[in-house]
Amino acid sequence: MVQAVILMCPLAWQVSSFAEFMRDIAGRHAARFSIRDDELQVIRDQRDSYWRIAIYGSSDRTGWIREYATNPDLDERFRLEVYALRPFIVNFNDLAVTRQLVIAVAREIVERGETAWMDTDYGWVIHVRELLQSCERNLRWDWRGSAPG
Image (cartoon, rainbow, N blue to C red; front, side, top):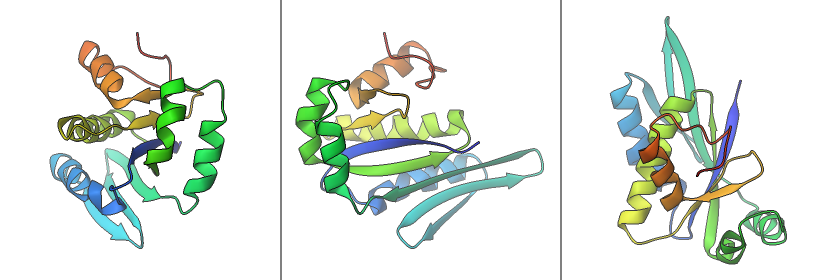
């Protein structure tokens, strides 16, 4: 089953900003990396294992901002920061591999001193620093089942 998260990254980020991370995932898992239009994808299509991760940007940044900034159920810090962020949709069907990707991206953003958030697609958002802390406490933490803490 295909699932998705939305990474809300700094405005300077583009789809191409994720290429190094996706190539690394492909190399570690004997998978294929490809670029299609404005989408990056990694596919592992082996007899014993099939999964796919794809990242693409949204052309409707204003719509995302309007939806997020006016949602009182989301973290207030996020609602204030969303104006300076760009959405990237990550479609996936393997949580463990996607967790590796998201952690690598989060580390890079934190190391740069930037801010970013992940919309879990389960009704809540998490700052990448908090995501890293949750994953460090539990390497198998599943953002689909519970908020951090």
